[in-house]
Image (tube, rainbow, N blue to C red; front, side, top):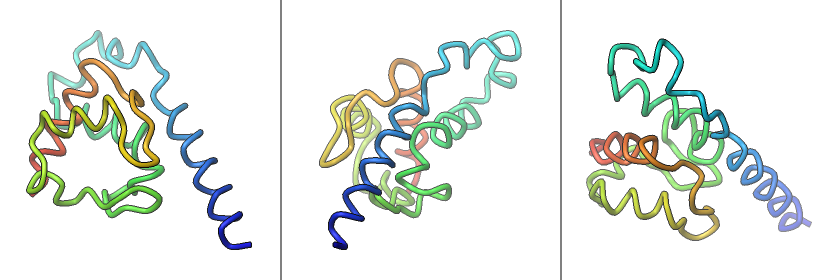
Length: 111
């Protein structure tokens, strides 16, 4: 019974996470400026919208692994590859393009 509940929870979390990054106009807010070019704030916003439901609001984990020190284990390029291709139960392509680059760089700095 516990496995069924866990499976339902995981499936719902993945569905919600996959739906989180669908705002194609996100970079056009504030005239495409993203708050004066602050890529850290933009990366955090993308993370909160697309990743936090599995990895936690504070990167502490949940359904997905803890990311608080992910930069000490993986480079930005390796993180970007995981974002693009997925790993384990994480589907690939939840975030793409510049957003994936920003989040990968931001997470790589978490040591």
